[in-house]
Length: 522
Image (cartoon, rainbow, N blue to C red; front, side):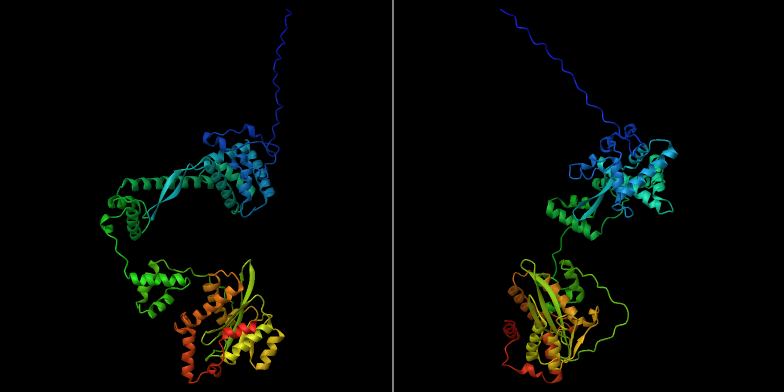
């Protein structure tokens, strides 16, 4: 038998990878020499060596991506987000580099070590949060996570440097001063003072929170809310969480004698009617709702009406006030009778796949009656002239027409129509919509109560909803400038006062305006 020689086992030789050369920060400072004393922040202060700390957003979408950034880059980015250096990373880079030069000159130490010491000293360990119990808000002190501690420290150091630079200091010197003061735990540092203030507030809030939960009386804490809201919070806690009266009162800090029973709301019929009116007319305030309630026999004091309106939560958010033009304004002549002056203007909206359409609005300035709401995808000057002819056949010839300087109103068709019908046409000054205030107010009501509330599927759907709203505006909706009358009521009152109605209104054989408009538009 021949002996088989065993193959000698080859010894595994470990090949050591070549060590990467140490890249000094800014070409001068070695980050491997920096020591982090606070062990809780050791994993969250990245000191990887980069000559130019710029990752280009490689860690932005990663979980806990800030850990991948060096603390130098995080500091530069935070300094860059200030109002002075917004979007200017090269300038922020230069500011930090020059500040390190000043720190090295004065301290004779590694500036990166001074930065790390400043971060450790100015990172708060506690903060204040708000907790909600029932209907009240309670403030309590909680511990801060290490990542947020570093973020807060970096932000406060940058804010302190920027605030100090406003006091006849350059940003480079101000940043160097802030870092050196924070590394020495000097109270003159903005970051150190901010940290002490935050921790002091957290300690006080934690004391008030514990005292409130222990049910201690005579607490020196500030009263957080009114007695009425605290009683409501106790009742809500008893109703929603099924706890005893004594425990609910102890939780919110009120006397149990004040929350023994819950009063039923007064005037339930009026409240129900107000809810129904507000559900249909969401932009109506309490005054117009009161007028509609009076028509149904529910008459009450305006103070009670406003109280019920507020208790039901029906308050409407007010629109922002418009900018007013400065200087003197020439007052327009007053329209003392119907058909004395008409106002015209265009509005725009969209339907379907963002397809736009236009609306021609015509009102009588005297009685505020809406004479025309005509919608179409395109409206020319000749179309406006045809609509005016239809209105003249129904209401009679106006004494004057007011409009802006739009291309439709300054077209040859309109000039020809005004000349043939002998109707004065007044154009307001450019950029002066207040000279046509009646139609602008009407446009605001139309936009607020219809166009912003409805979605139009088609052009026919828009025309139908405009016709319904026009009838409601003229015959149902109370108008505040007319003494809460409707425009039709105001027209009838003025015609009866004059003793005779316009001749156009006496033509019973004339079809209604909507039919005429439909025929003219086809």
